[in-house]
Image (cartoon, rainbow over all chains, first blue to last red; front, top):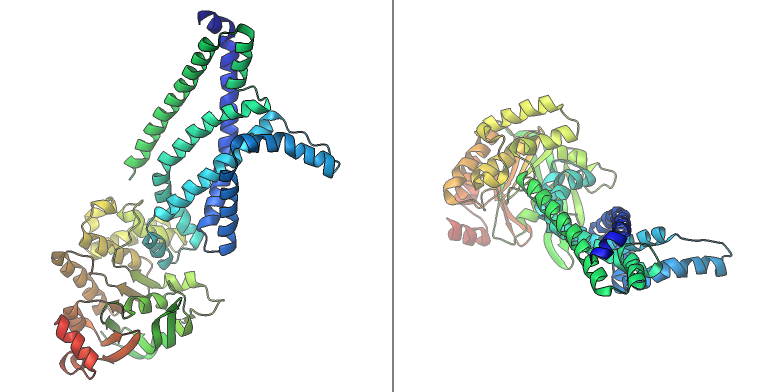
Length: 222
Length: 248
């Protein structure tokens, strides 16, 4: 164990950095997608609702590993063979897209449920004062919705962080992928994987604690 | 309480409203004048609240016309937000903004719609709070208020927009009995100041004392209308009599 840490510790830490980078990129775009599709699904417009529903259903219905293969291998193949264009995606880009889509779909559902959990009377009261729909949404409904959404969003962030490990299959040098190389070098799978597990555990525990503090802060403001 | 019969504030003509196949309002017509206090009574499910909500277009209208404060709410070109700035509404369940404290509740719309600067809005809001007797609650969140206090704040919030017309949707129905009085008193004061008011309520005492005119609704229609005297002393319709004998 000590040998692994001393010889491969730096490599694994750097891999953890890559994992965090990938998770962060994915989450940023996931939030944008989630907000967009979440909003589409609460609008009083059939077409918008259907678009949001299809997005969520498709992404939820496809395992992320398949999505990863599809984006990393399938899409460039499609461009090359059918459009005669050379498109190559870096593993980071493909990984980010994959995480963003996957996490975005779940975020959309969290945001939809959060907005719908706010009493309709809040929107009506705001509208009755003359506030336009989006102002009422922004000033009254969303602030209340976000408070109920926070625990689920944090949960989703943690899941997404762990899901980065799936992207080892497209060769992104995140933690699991690097650990595989370490095992191939040293044959010490017990020590290596235990170490990797502990690393994930530490990072996620820290994140959960930070999230709890954040949540409490927000609740103090009522 | 001078009713200005020359100025129609709310013109309702052949109004009808259906939810899917259920017809809730059938061919309602009436005119409400400036300074008039109209109280709508009737059994639950008779369409009173829906009628009120059609007036400021919280409900889509399926037939007929409503012109409120000069705004035709059925016309697609009408700026409903502008209309609503002039038409205050008070809800059964108060609907105070839970994420904002009392003062912020009152200031939100005037500041956001750029009707007043922050300082003007704050002064105005404090004035309105004084009017409903809740100045000391300015910094408090709605969850810390009693039902009666919440409803008085809700009235103050609507008044901060300087509305020409106030709509009340069962403002005391969700209150504990001992808190009904404080809310009704604020409404009486408002009526005395000459505000045009439409009130859906089950408070027959309020209807009798304050109303210029009472509309009795039943089955989505105005079954009978008249002064409190006419309605309470000498109801013409059997349905009105049945209803009043239940509630009085």
